[in-house]
Length: 428
Figure 1 (cartoon, rainbow, N blue to C red):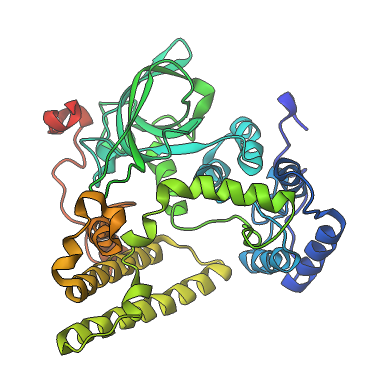
Figure 2: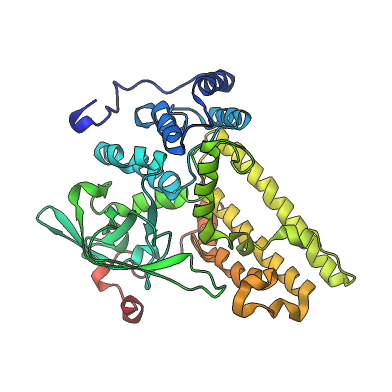
């Protein structure tokens, strides 16, 4: 252990596991046989997972992992399933914040936030998008000014899921207005339990309120809570956005069908976490309902066939992508392809549902939960927007897969203060 009790990372840390997946599988099975007890509280079990490294086995050994390869991690997950053991929670803390801290955070920040992420004591939200910067995320105008060793942040964020219950935020803000827009951004960890943070849920057209608008007025962040370098936040944010499409965690066995205190508390936790997102299956179009449908109209049957074909292609591509990840390949443009496939499948499903239901699809529009088809039609547009619009994904594919030149940009080299912005959007 180093100064302030921070685990030592580097030459003195144990080497990562290089054993074959079968050897790692046996190690995991032996550890589970000695430690897994469904009668434990969820908190106690998660503490054991965090301290053993089996909760997120691909993380470094020095930071609550086992240094395992993706292939070995898949074998470990199978052992957890076989034992009926609960894994770590699939929270934003584990899937977004932790990978970002492992890639860019200081040892001090890792020591503060990684273990609480695994045991579930912190809840996180992403504070990236703004009223005037969505797809063009590099145009953020939330302002951060250094005041005697503390950053003072003022601005507005929008479309932040889970912000109403979050304890911490991953935030990007403008710290230098005299350089081009991508170079003047800094990435912060913000404690949301302080004066100056106002969270307002946003009512969606499908009657749900999963997202929030967050206003920050004079919010203070210690200089030690900068992730990466000052002015280097764009690179750090890219890591978070990539992590949004993949999870490094071992989620363990499904808990709803199993007994014991740990399973019961994990099921309750999962139900609470999933409640704001109960409409998410509808935003992906519910291809399962399309597959079960029948019609005498040949045009409708053709659309049903189109949905089934697109779904099968997406499944095959997903299997190929996961196989590549197990072999250590990156996810960059492949994630964009997968997201674009999901958008196209959802829209094809929406067309099929509308054709099958006809005018009945409009029933329940004022209270979409009364009619699943109406909720699907009102929810599907979200999948083409969240996590980067379809147009952004196409640009990534064009540049990284097809090798096409980047779109010309008139402001790429301008100091950000000279870039024309929408004052109306920034004042909303």
